[in-house]
Image (cartoon, rainbow, N blue to C red):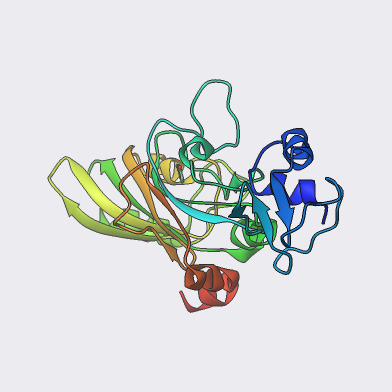
Length: 243
Ligand code: URA
């Protein structure tokens, strides 16, 4: 890999800023001044210093965000802050959210630059379970639970796949529920409740495949995934079969 790409990938600057830094002598490769921005370096083998500080190469980054309301699940947006704006300790510039949560939905969102993992989690054929907590209008009845389990018409070509709806509590006016679905249609949870005459008033994603929202994360906070979480997610399909 070219030295300027290595440093730019790791967020040291733009490609041209990095080139200037190299020309100004701010970079060392294995203790020596590099021959130029196009010098070949081997991530993991060569020691790269920028202004005397080691710069380790990370091919992939993985963040768990507890998404707050008000920001959009996009890389850029002309109107609203994005989930990427919240990740202020990132190296890679090619990060993206894995799937979308609505602007008013909170909770678990994975942010990475690992396209293969993203595909494993989102491809329709994978049926990765996603669990949501919601507060909805009205009282969730046994018949609603049965309807969610059977599948329902939400205006798509096919009925929804069986979903597990669990009533946690109700106060006579509103219900609190947990719902696990294995698809990711646009506004799916809201549309499923609409189909049984109820409105989602609050929605939060709790888990996606093997990945559970860390409940020590306040809304708006994020952390890197642990090695174990990354390994488990890599085997999401197998885990799904056990769910
Ligand atoms: N279903 C919805 O309706 N909204 C979300 O943000 C996620 C699932």
